[in-house]
Structure formats: structure tokens, C-alpha cells
Length: 211
Image (cartoon, rainbow, N blue to C red):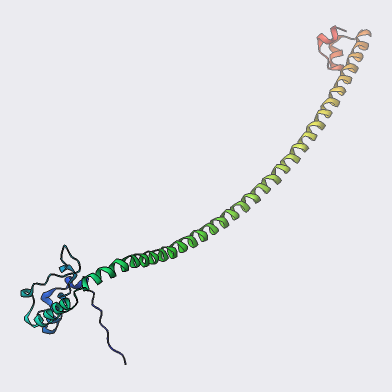
């Protein structure tokens, strides 16, 4: 066998617009009944008792109010019992609330850590790819430096060869000059005019006259 269950959240009772209840007699009576247990009516100096002004409640609730008052009279230790229950229950409730809060935060922390780990993995992967690209770039630069080194070496060998060539040409020019001077001297000794010797040897007039 099953029954319908209705849960009333008393803290939200005062949010109901009473004007909406007036057209419905059943709802109005139910609302008035629930107002008997309105927690905002607690006494300032004693949270275990409610202030009930009977003149504010409809007459049909007189019987309920009297029954509640009778229950209070029949149980003189009820208030102390409630205080004792709160004394022991409140720490337990605080503990349970703290445990629930820790569990919720644990879950959120774990999710946050998972996100951070995933983010770090992606970051490490990106850095790995970047390092790989830099490695390939460095390798390409090394190969380029090697090629430039070989080119510089080849240019050095070429400069060396050109230097040897220039040296050989210099020696050749020196030998030719020596031959021209000897030839010009022999022609001068034979009495040939300076102008004709110039044409034959391409020496300057001053060089011929010094012979």
C-alpha cells in the first residue's frame, strides 16, 4: 500500500500571497493551519516556543490550538528534551554539513585538478612539438653552417690558388722586365736611338736612359 506524500517547507510559507488564497476556502484554511507552525513566530527569548495570538487565527483552529496547549501541559519536560536533542544533534548536523561540504569540495577539487592535468598535458604536448620544431630548425641551421663552412673553405682554397697565380704572374712579369732591360741595353750599346728602343721594348724613356 502506498500513500501520497506532501512536504511543506515552512520557511517559504510567508512568500505566499494571501490574496491568491481567499477565493479558495480549502487553501485558506490549510494556510491558516500551517501558520500555526510558522517559525518566524518564535519568541525572542525562547526559540522553542511560538507566539500564538488566538484572535488572529480563524475560530475553526481553536480546537487545534487547545490540543497543542494540552500537549505542552501533558509534557512538562518536552522543552528540556528539545534542548537536549538540539545540544547533541546540532554538533552532529554541523559535522554532517561539514562532511558534505568537504565531499562537494573534494569532487570540485578533483575535477579542477583533472582539468589542470589535462591542460598541463596539452601544454607539455605543445611544448614538445615546439621543441621538436626548434630541434629541426637547429639541425637545419647546423647543416647551413656546415655548408657555409665548406663554402668558406672552398673560397679560401680559391683565394690561395689566386694568390699563387698572382705570384707566378708577378715572377713572370719580373722575368719579362729583366729580359726587356737586357734587350734594351744591348740595343743601346749598338747605338740604336732611344725612340726606336722604346718601340721595340715598351720601356719608358727614363728607364732606357738609365741603362
